[in-house]
Image 1 (cartoon, one colour):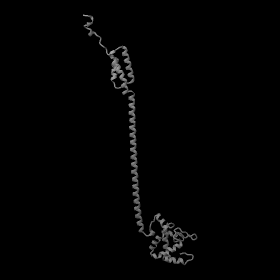
Image 2 (cartoon, one colour; image 1 turned 30 degrees about the vertical axis):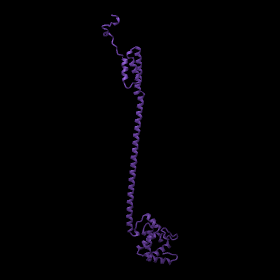
Image 3 (cartoon, rainbow, N blue to C red; image 1 turned 180 degrees about the vertical axis):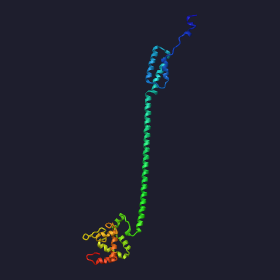
Image 4 (cartoon, helix red, strand yellow; image 1 turned 90 degrees about the vertical axis):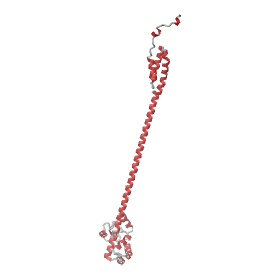
Length: 265
């Protein structure tokens, strides 16, 4: 037989086995990882170059493919894209926190406003109740006072001001309390028109006589009340008592007054 058909009997047994390339194995393992950094990719490319330089054609194609794929995987997972994703997450968390704080502040403001409205409502209700009670007490007081004789009533400052403006209705009531009928009213009205024109503050500049009945001295009226300087009721009550004791009636006092020149009684 020719030499071309000869096969060594033990050739296969003694053939040198192919040894694994550590660099190629490392690159393949790295290629399976979902995230790879740029530095590792550069190292892998260096390893590829070294392998090609050594001349291992069996692994050159696979290694090259793995090395070229690795940078794309790195960009998708852990490179700049990873940083951007982290920044987006941080922005979203910040926005959610800001919204949560805003909602909390709005809720607190609403609660404070509701509390303020409730407090104002309670205050107004309390004031209305107090005012109602005050009116009720005042009405009861006026009812009690109305049952008393005019000269014994406890008038308020506002009521005194009204009496000062128009004392005649109270004078009629006081006159009746002394036992005189309304026929005496005309005489009383005319008498005190001549003396003071029914002015509670009238003062005689020459004699010092004072008030509606022109008491002289003025301090005499203190026997009917310490408020004689300002209260027409006290002045009228004193004057009617003086007329009764001195002249018996308003008409008797007016008759005497008309007969005096200058007039006095």
